[in-house]
Amino acid sequence: MPPFKTVAAHVPDGVGMLAVGIVTEVFGPHGAALPGFDFALCADRTGPVPTDCGVPLSITHGLDRLACADLVIALPGAGFRTPPSPALRNALRAAHGRGSVVAAHCVGTFALAAAGLLDGRRATTHWRFAELLAGRHPEVTVEANALYVDEGSIVTGAGAAAGFDLCLHLLRREYGAALANAVARDMVLPSHRDGGQAQYLAAPVPEDGQDERLAEVLGWAREHLHEPLPVTELARRALMSKRSFARRFTAATGTTPHAWLRSLRLSRAEELLETSDLTIEEIAHRVGYSSAAVLREQFVRRRGVPPRAYRRAFTNTL
Image (tube, rainbow, N blue to C red; front, side):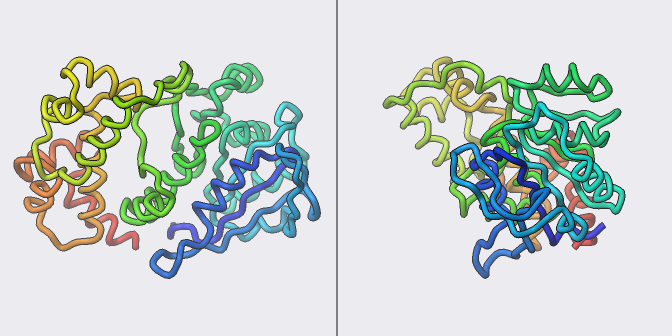
């Protein structure tokens, strides 16, 4: 299947405006430097649709818009506890049957479950409603801690801002790390977050001078991936002990410094494999690995294929 070109997001009554903003921001226009998508918002009926902020959205596309979309996204709405209309369930099943990628964000996952698309599959939703989803649909394996779950033609995401994680993952999967990173930079967001929803259940880390120093160190590390970057050096730059730095880092990001750096290095390696003619050895050194063999080991373990195979597969896909 070629990468998706047309995107239709379903807007239910009481839709979350954050969710609308996320899909519009990701799949809307980003200027001539990035490829555009044929993007539309659609609903069970055209006309004004109530939102969670009290301002109605004027929707000009009905469910027929799903018929020509390569990617269909079910957005969260206030009435998710009530089964969606038969027309929507049929439209979602028909889209999936035609070969479209069908995704859902937050409690939009309930619509996919009601349509039977999640039977025998893994899925996620907002952590607050994971138990409800599992209770109503025991045939679905609910992964309450995941930011998103990729089941191939069905992809589900967690709540609120995790919609960005879902959409950027879809871009990365279909178009590669270079495009996903470019869109993320345009939105001033990380292109990939490690960790799961559990990191957001407790009270957030208070903002103070230490957090500001931590942010500066993370920015510096992104610009110096070609260097070894031991945790002792990062801690020194943050003016913290190694133990305090590791604890603060995990509280702020939901992952360890080692895991964060590894993810960053591999993401950058993906981008270079997609967009450059550099040798694997050169790429390894640019992202901070001592040799092509070390990069290959990490790439196979985390991505499932060696770098050369990734480069060939990505080139053939496009």
